[in-house]
Image (cartoon, rainbow, N blue to C red):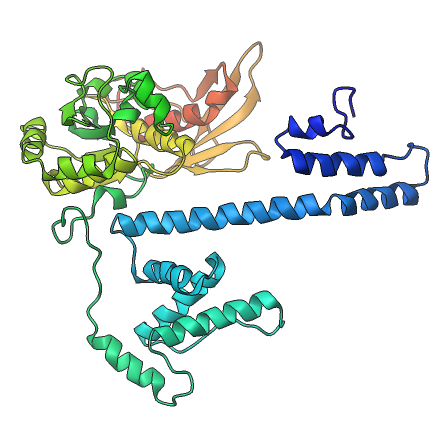
Length: 443
């Protein structure tokens, strides 16, 4: 405890994010059951702690209830968003039906959907076990059975499974409705996987990057403050040598524009009506084809979220088909991490890098990374200043004698000044050695 932290003062808890009524209960608990002196018997001090915890139990239960409410609200909101974007499946629609028709919470609605789907798919009725007899288990079991009967199942009928399986075989598979029906076999950009280090590196001139206006950092400060926080990716792109050779397209309220055409403070997409307007605009496909004319691409990355991703989905059939098609997703930190992975796969003209997934070892035993026959190992601080990385072969010997395609000799020992760059430096070293050769004159 410090003098600045007084648990018996309600303002102490208010300043740390607690509600005033919760702060008052917590402060009262500390006032009623303060800490005993350190020389008091351990049993008495433990008993005092238990008394204080018991006094604060209403607050803990209220906090847990609020967290549970927020969890269920997030899950239902996510499911509603997928249904609204025509990405939800039959089970997700059943989850919302269980909530709306039966007032189920999230867990019960999921069991309702499981029962409904099992009945329609012709599966055997397998409700969750309620052997413990707890109210929660009984409630989830009842929700499953309600969904099972809602889907047409009858657990008391001896021939129920055969009957439903026969019906399910002739039932057409429902297909989600989208803004612009995509070509068969062509996934929408919103369904593309996140970037990984598995695909082989690609020349920057054969890479296509499509950015949302917030990701490109071109929104006016007022619009950026009103909208949700976005990952500003353009500074990371500018730092990469050779990235200027890539084709970069930005999506804003004006539609698809080259990154050089977009002025600062471009208008943002505000509502779904803006997306519908771009989806129905016959000029957008023409602009997109003009931006892509005369170029062949091996990779596409979509770095856009929300309404901007919807606008790209609406014109997905006008994008070229490539061997690698990916998009950034999830939180801001993950979006930036995905973008860095994609940047690391960029290759300058005349450069060769090793491809494949880098396998990382445990930090506790000394961080290691493996790619093919090479192993990059962190060996600790270098004499004087910096940190040392050694690239070794499978036999443990340093990787001597390797040269790049440009004739530059690679050194197996790499020194870095900032340990924060350890992983990126190890990955870059492995990529460089993976693209190097020993078939050259001795230097």
